[in-house]
Length: 385
Ligand SMILES: Cc1ncc(COP(=O)(O)O)c(C=O)c1O
Image (cartoon, protein in one colour):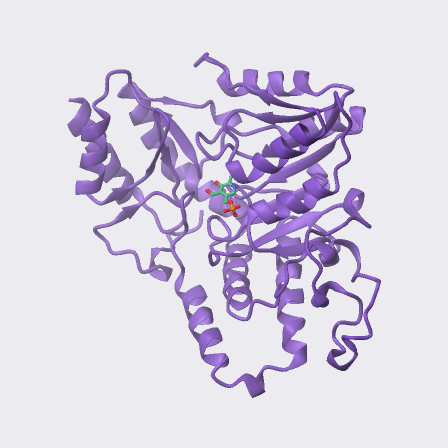
C-alpha cells in the first residue's frame, strides 16, 4: 500500500481535511508549478507561439493516459463541467416524446442543460428516484436506472459516483443498455476520476467530463473532457481561433479556416493554453499517475474500512461496498442525532467534511491518515453518547 503523502501538502497537523469532494488541497509540486507559471508572464517575450500548443498537448496526453484513451486528440480542455455538458447537449437531437434519463439530485451542472433541452423539445427528463429503502439501496437504484432506459431514450446523463452520497453507478451495464436502444451516455466524472479507476475503453462513454479542482488535484476554473466518435463533426458552443486547423501559424490567422483540428479539439475552450492552469494540472496529473489511481483507491479503502465499521456500530448507515467507492462515502446519520451539535463539534475539532441532506460526506485522500479518522470518530462519540 502507498504510504501517506501528507508531506506533499501543507495541511497543518491539527486539521483533519476529509473533504476532497468539496475541493482538493493544492499539493506542493502543483503550487510551485503555479508560482513559476505566474512569474513567466513577467517576461512575455519568452512565451513563444509553440507554448500555446505544446504544454496543453502534453496535458491531454496525461489525461488520456489516466482514463485509458489511446488518442489524446479525443481530449478537450474545458473551463467547467457545465461547459463540457453544454457542448454535448448542443449536439443532441431529440424529438417530442423522447426522453433523457438521469438520477435523483444529480449535480446541477449536469442537469440544467438537459432540462432545457427536454423542455424546448417537448421531451421528457426522466429522473430515476433514489429508493427509500436502506437495504440494497445502491443495487435497487442501479436496477431502476436500467429499467428506465427505453426505446425513446436519446441520452443518459450520469455521474460515476453520486456527488452527494457516493452511490456508484454501474456504467458498464448502463452502456450496454444504452447501446441496445442507441442512446448516448454522458458521464460527469468529477467525483471519481483521479481517485477511482475509470477506463474509457471498458466503459465506452460518449463523453466524460471532469472538473480539475477535486480529484484531479488541479486548479479551479479548468476541467478535462473526453468526446467519443458520436460527437465528431459536431458544433462547439463557441468559435475560437485556436481550435481551427493550422492555428499554430499566427501570421495566417485571418486567412479564416473552415476546418477544425481533429476529433474533440473543437470542444476545447477559448484560451485553452491556460498558461497558469495547464502547468498546475500537468503537475497534478503527473503525481496521480505516479501514485496510480488504483493505489489511491486502495489507500482510501484500507484507511476508511475500520472506521466505517465503527460508524455503523454507532448507528450510522453506509452504502454497500459494491455500490460505492472508498474515497467519497455518504454516511447517513442515526435518526434523532443532534445535527447542530455534530456540525459544531466537527468545526471545533477542525474536522472538515460536507453535509448533504441527512448525510455526512466523508472524502479522504492520500494526505489523510488514521489520526483524522480518530478525530472524526471522537466527534461522533461525543455527540451520540
Ligand atoms: C459531480 C460534480 N460535477 C461538477 C461539479 C462542478 O461543476 P462546474 O465545473 O460546472 O462548476 C461539482 C462540484 O461540486 C460536482 O460535484
